[in-house]
Amino acid sequence: MAQTYNDAVPASTRDALEDLTAIRNNFAALKSCFSGATAPPDPVAGMWWYDTTANILKLRNEANSAWLDVYDFANGRAPLALLATNCSRTVVAGTGVSVSGSLASSNVTVGLSSGGVGATQLANGAVNPSKLSGYTAASTYIIAASDSECSVIVTTWTKYKEVRLDKGGSLRISFDLYCPGNGNDAHARIYRNGSAVGIARERTAVGWQTFTEDISGWSAGDLVQLYAYHELSQPAAVRNYRLYSGSWPVLEVIM
Image (tube, rainbow, N blue to C red; front, side):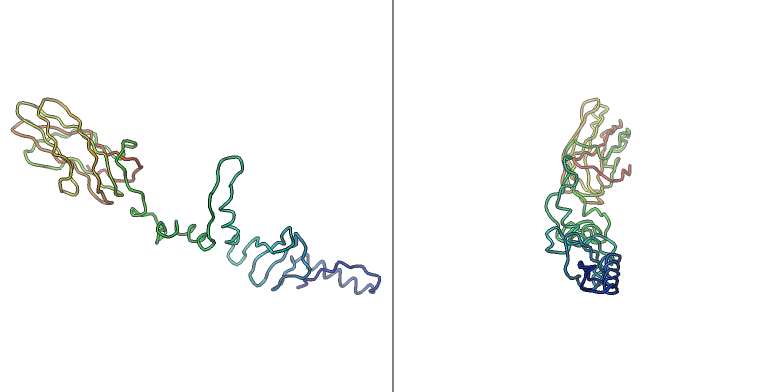
């Protein structure tokens, strides 16, 4: 494919056939974007070159000192070097939207296809609990609620409420406990997977009382449970079982 552009046409020192050949070659070079395995000779600023070896369309820079990669046809995308450069610049001037820092070209494909780089990368390209930030004990969000009232009719520790976690961390947990009075003291406690971890709560006066505590050490898949029992013959009750966190959840309320 013609890559040489002859600026000296027509010329009085050549015959018409030579000039026509030169003009024809000039048009062929322009038509093909100076396609060739090596860079065309005598480049000028703004000149196009289709590099057939790398299968990349290139443009001569304004200083006429280097070729800039414009599009990688072999991979159907902008070149990685161009993506990495643009990712470190302001996205839209004047809007306050920007991407700070720079990306190594080796990380661009990894970050886009695998969801992160290094320690945060998703090995299988899918979100999983270990990649999610943990819960924090705060009252920002009610991440689970089972407000229905349950009558506590047993005299030994029994499970009445249960939530399965999608990720770990710390939780703020609250519930209401009802005591019927007359010595029928009511008891409730937070359990983790069938083992007591919360403070053993007791209500001795007639009526409802709200209990709240922060508990840490939770893991994805853990069951956050409310156990309760009453004394003597009259049943107690629990309600408004709620889990709070500073981060938003994806979990399952079982009961």
